[in-house]
Length: 406
Image (tube, rainbow, N blue to C red; front, top):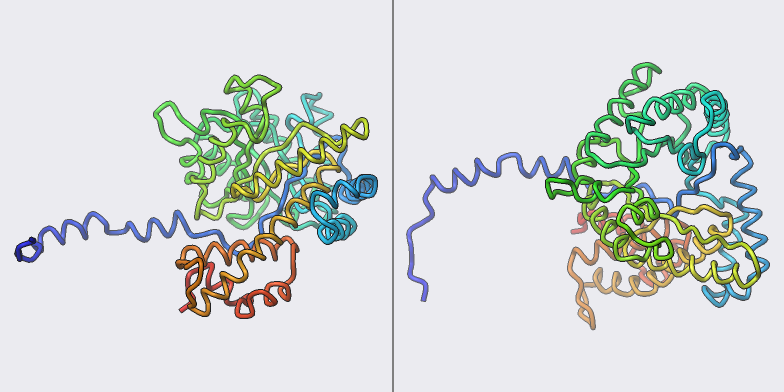
């Protein structure tokens, strides 16, 4: 039996106050939440040597042809309704986030050639007018740094302005200092071009085990993210460089290998509640070749995208027009299934009813978030949401997500 005791000494309470002074404000600054901007379902990489203002339409047309050629398989994978929704998406806005590649997908070329391609890329991005677009520069390593910076400068110069939604990807991250260097680069470019502070944003591409686990035993990527001064928009996983660096045999290198799962889990934990998006990598298996090879690749990619979505990776890389078909199909079917499960639970929570599942505020937040994500990628409409959860309008969903619903 606990005996009555004396009150806690004021000196101890003062020590606790001193210890925790400023902690709440620091956490709010470092972990502000995910924000309201929808996350794109993918980033499409196109070599800067090949990309034009017509690339999105050309990819959409090629993807539509593949859909028509294998519609029976796609209906089997996702159903007639989602396949029809994919067809509409491919006709209207097949690519959400376009990245013109000056790194592995571009290779090493003479400086005058890359200079020319960089200027052309700037003109292309300025003309596209998309919400999200940008370039992947070469890494900020000693061997490639000057070339990477020159390419970025030339792209911005040629664009004449910062294209809408512009972001540049920094590959081959191995040390937190590379994020600091990216911040300094942004600051210098903003000053040189007369841009407002914070205009330029970047992504960090995780292709090295050292970016996940540093020599001191800490998570390098967490340090890098918090050195980014709020400019880091996303963390992108690089499947094949990372797998190779871990010694994985080529035939086993894939998004679903255990080393990939570990790296992405660390990335997801580091980025949680920071507003930084985590993107899965790509598959090197293209839907090309014989009919059976194409169908096998479509099944494979659909499985990988679904698997990523189930693990909380809502964005990935697409490297071939055919990937758009299974990317959108897997995404739409995933979020439609999520609404069917989340809608009744949301309404029960709003009604404060009991039932087979009793949800807590954190779960209500997750339910609202997945519905908002589905709305953000047009997997369903608000009318569809209200049909299964009449009380869950946009205002309510956002309040649940922010845990401000009284």
